[in-house]
Amino acid sequence: MSSSRDAVGLAPWACWPERSRGRRFAEPAAGTRDEHQRDRDRIVHSTAFRRLVYKTQVFVNHEGDLFRTRLTHSLEVAQVARSAARQLRLNEDLVEAIALAHDLGHTPFGHAGQDALHGCMSAHGGFEHNLQSLRVVDTLEQRYFAFDGLNLTFEAREGILKHCSRRHALRLCAAEADGPARRFVDGGQPSLEAQLVNLADEVAYCTHDIDDGLRSGLLQPAQLEAVPLFAHWHEAARDDHPGEARGRARTPPGRRVIFETLRRLLSALIADLVQATEAAIAATGPSDIGAVRCGPALVAFSGCQRAQIDALKHFLFGALYRHPQVTQTTALARQVVTELFEAYRSDPGEMPAEHAAAQDTPRAVADYIAGMTDRFALREHRRLTGRRVFGDV
Ligand code: MG
Image 1 (tube, rainbow, N blue to C red):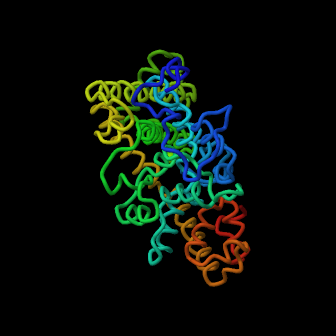
Image 2 (tube, rainbow, N blue to C red):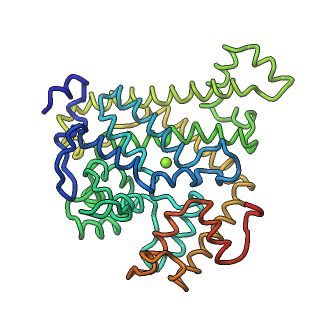
């Protein structure tokens, strides 16, 4: 146990880098960085991470330069997670690593792309973005002589594999008995750092999707007044800035009031998460990470906040994610992914040599498509079909 870690106040139940369960392939220590700092650095330098800049979060990339992409979403998740981790004395470098990697397995065009690819792969084991994120860091990144993948620590991989069906877990355990899929067979919990990133993801998208929804004009502030969590902070922001509030009667609501509302909402969500988690940790008193993995889930919102977040998510689902303008785009995106899959399957030679040469053609096609950015997928679709599904993009 390092005294320098005590000095920065890492809690006994946090992931201490010197107690890591290690990497699949043994490597000498980095010297200037600890194991989880090294995980984070490897993710930042990966090809899959750079591709996130041109992958859809909710809005397809060409719809506007200011909407969130998978990259800016991941950075916001990392910000939320680090902020809470510091207060909870959890490992900030590890939560940052998990946050930056948590969406690496997403296809182009967000959930529409994943659904389409899962449909194409239904007879070949399916496609699921959490499994794909692990596959990216374990196998698909090829930049080291000694191994495929990034050879991340167990703790980083455990956080990246956030969900996994029992069927997939059994398959993964057959290849790696004590790997990160084990808990989906045995029923254990991941580290508190992994649990935290999971909820930081929710905090980030709940707030930034309101911002993007309003910016796009698909959501109106008046609609959001029906959502208690938004209405509460919106009213507080207007009360503190009555000049802006009066202006609302004559002109569209000021952006500053919205920003102030979302800032307060974000802070409130993080504060609630930290408080409820501190209470759960105090009630359970895990002695170390081993006890965390055997105990109940400890990172949580309060019951009241949980219910309000669920109401907000329900609203976003109906009003934004299922907005006709969004679903029209996602229908086209599904078409692009499905037609790309068919084209590469019938002629694998259309893919780069390393994918074309793979034994398992459907999986190689899925890996290739999943790695694409939105705009590369559209360019390939145009090359292979001669059609432009999104007009002049
Ligand atoms: Mg996410």
